[in-house]
Every structure is written in structure tokens, then in C-alpha cells.
Amino acid sequence: MTIYFYSTNDEFFEFSNFSEHGFTLKNKYWPTVEHYFQAQKFPGHAQEENIRTAKSPAKAKQLGRTRSVPLRADWETVKDDIMREAVLAKFRAYDDLKERLLNTGNDKLVENAPDDYYWGCGKDDSGKNMLGKIVMETREILRQEQKAVKS
Image (tube, rainbow, N blue to C red):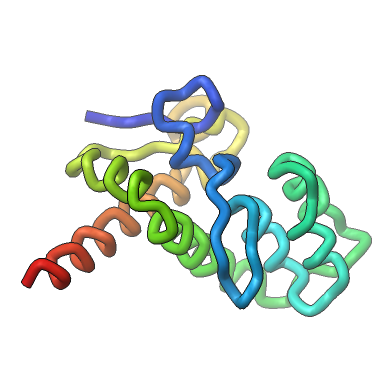
């Protein structure tokens, strides 16, 4: 089975980066994965904190897309690992969310973002679905951690 997530109307919306499941990383609280991800484009710059404290994930995304502040030089190289770090922190922070993810078994998870062909599946399902892949990787990490605790 394939599980799609993206909008607030989706049954699995909480798998989205816009779900309000905050977590702590780098000794700071981040309201959503989107806040963390966008802020990491500008480490050590005032823009990082502007994004962290944005009123919504949509505002964080908008602030992250600014080019009035230069992106970190290695962004294209590190962005996937930054997403992995944030998604894992989010799912580790909430037992109910972790269980919901683990209960998806081996279902394929797809970010059904029609305009995003990198993180999502795009309009025609030809996108890379990197966020879906990262959430599935996270599921496997959590599964292994759960097994380690039980043994």
C-alpha cells in the first residue's frame, strides 16, 4: 500500500514538515521540521533565528527562500542530512507519532506535493519523493531502536 501525506486534510498529515510537532536540536526548540530545515540554510546568521521564531511553517519556508542573505555554500551537499536529522528528532520526540509511523509497516510513504519534484512526488508522480524516503528511513531506524530496547 502507498500512504500519501502533504496537506492538513490528509490522514497522515503529521508526517509532513508542517505538522506542529516541535523538538529540540542544537540546544534550541524548533516548532516544526520546516522551521529547522529552512533555518539551517543560514547557520550563525540572524536569519537562522528569524526563521526559528517564525509564526508558522509557511512563514519559515518563505523566510528560508530569501536570497537577500546568502545560502550556506555547502547547502546542496548537506540538505538531505539536515532533513534526516530533523525528521528523526521529530519522531523520537513523540511516542504516539513514532507508533503511528511504525504502524505503517512497510507501506510506501509519499509526500504528495504537486509542485515539488525533489522532496515530493510532483504533479505526475515522477518526483524523487526524498521526504517520503527519509520518513521511511526514519521508520527503519526507529524499528531498529525498538528492537535494541527489547533485547
